Each structure stands twice: as structure tokens, then as C-alpha cells.
Length: 410
Image 1 (cartoon, rainbow, N blue to C red):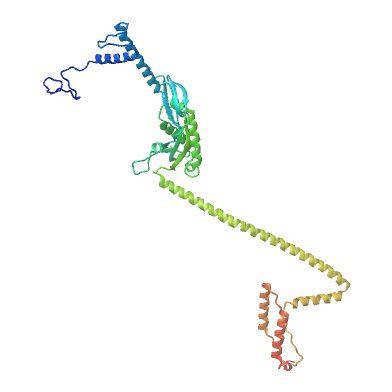
Image 2 (cartoon, rainbow, N blue to C red):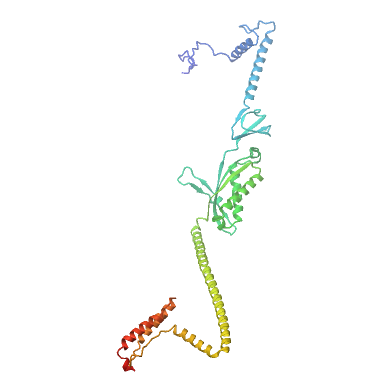
């Protein structure tokens, strides 16, 4: 049975107190007791029956402690309310203060104070934290895949009417918390992602597919960074773009094999062009050098022929002058010089016929062989002493073979 019903058999309440058949204390009595104690603190003495012993009436004595209690409570409440305005701002944070909904000031790091609500409001914002926004993909933290592609953000149209799958990572922080608080209503990541997608579509739309995928990555990234910052500044978002990174740029998966074939063909074309240029750079200088050498040899031959002709003409004129002075002497001298020049380049055979009438045997095979050897040596640039050699060989062999037949030959 409940403890507070008759016949429950218990004299104690659920809190272990003995009721003793008495009623619970009255709330008004508790309030009066507290007022009496506070009244004693403020100089108002009351008896046990609730009447004061002072000179004033009982009603005035009962009102004075109540007013003092209200004042004390109000003072304590005001102090507590004012104490809630004390706050601390970290080194990487800034506090934006609003007074009755209007911007008042921006406070820096340290211990600060402002009027609590509803008079003033404060918004503490971290301005140095670096945030990352992903465009075209999302990083996967729980699954085995490193990232999840988003074709709706990644697929873009280039200037040459090709579709490209491009992904960016944008690092940003806040440079003006006031602008971020008053001019941007959506979350910061959403604003940065939408502005980045707009900037990338504009830059990619002005570029060709080959330029974006191959050699223009750095240029595209720099242009996107500049354009994105201009867009956010025009919106007065208070966002500062630290870095823009191009994560990937490739054709869509549906046409990637065909694109790889086209890229391979283009690389083969460049390779063949480079080989042709290398061959051209090797052949043309050698051909030019050969042509220059032939021209120089022709010039030298021309100069030598002209000089030789001029010398021959001069010598002939001098000989003619001498011939007119002494024709016989000049004729003999010319004959001797001519025979000397002819016989100096031919094989000679000396025969002694004083021994009798032996049959003369001419070694024609030996003479022909010596002539061939002489022509070979002359072509190789070696002097061939044909006079002394042929003379000695011919004379010795002739003497040996005709020693016993000289008389018969005569």
C-alpha cells in the first residue's frame, strides 16, 4: 500500500523520515522563515510569533526584508548576467560582436567582454583553419576505395567540343569573418564548391582537351585559382583561397580506349618527326660540307690550271725568243730535254755488242712486270727508281744470257 494512505503500517515516508502523524511543512512557513533570517541580517528583529520588536508597525517590518531580498536577488542576477559576457578568443580565432543585431566590432585573440544577450551577440570564428573542398570526387574514409567519382561535377565540355573528366581540390581559409557572417547564408564548403565548379567550367570551356590533359595543367590550375578568388571577392564572402590542386584530368571512361589510341598515334607521329629531324640534321651538314669541299677543290684546280697555263705560255714565249736567236742550239736542247723526260719514265735495257755475234734475247715478260709495278707505285705516291733497277737487272741478265752467243749474233 502507498506510504501516504491510512493503514499502510509505516510511519516513515520514502525519504526515511518519521512522519509521526504530522502534516508536511507549509511553503508559506518556509518563506517566512527565510524572510526572518534575512531580516535579522538587515537589522529587523522579529519574535517567534512573527511580530517585530522595533518601533515600527508589523507591516512595515515585514515589507523591508522582502524588498531587500528582491534587491539582493536582482543584484546577484545582474552580476551573473554580466559575468556571462566574459569570454576568451584563441590565437587562431576572431570574435564578431553585434549590438542589437548590428555589427559593432571584430575582436582579436585574448580575454574579452561584451554585453550578454539580448543586447549584444558574439560569433567566434576560426580564421586560420585550412579547409579542403573536393570538386568532382569525394574521399572515402570508411570503404576500401580511396575516392568516389561524381560525374555531375567532374564532366565538362572543352573548346574543341570534347568531354573531359577533371577533378580539383581547393584549400581555403577565412580572411574576413564579418563578410562571411553577413554576406553568405549557405555553408562555406557549399559556396566554395559551387564557385570552383563555375570557375573550372569557364576555364576548361576556353581550352582544348589536349592542352588541359597534357602540357596545360599548370596554366589551367593557375587560371582557376585567380578566377575563383575573383568570384569569391565579388560575392564578398570573406574567403581566401590558399591553393588549388588538379587531382586528375582524363577523358571519360567510355571513350578512354579510343583516346589512348589517339594519344599513342600522336606520340608515334612526334617520334617519327624527331627521327626525321635527327636524320636531316645529320645528312644536310655532311652534304653541305661535301659541296663546300668540291667547290674548294674546283677552285684549287682552276687556280692550278690557270697558273700552269700561264707558266707554260710564259716559258714558250721565252723559248721562242731564244730560238729566234739560235735555232740549232735551241732545237738540240729541246730534243735532249724531251728525250730525257720520256726515257726517265720508261724501262731501259743496256746491251753490250762488242763481244761478237750472239743472239739477243729480250726479257719482255720481265719488262712488262716492271712496268706494271712502276705504274702501281706511281699511283700510291711512292717514287720508283726504274732507271737503276731495270738497268742493273736488264744488263746482268742480258750479259748472262748472251755471253756465249755474242759472236753468232754478229
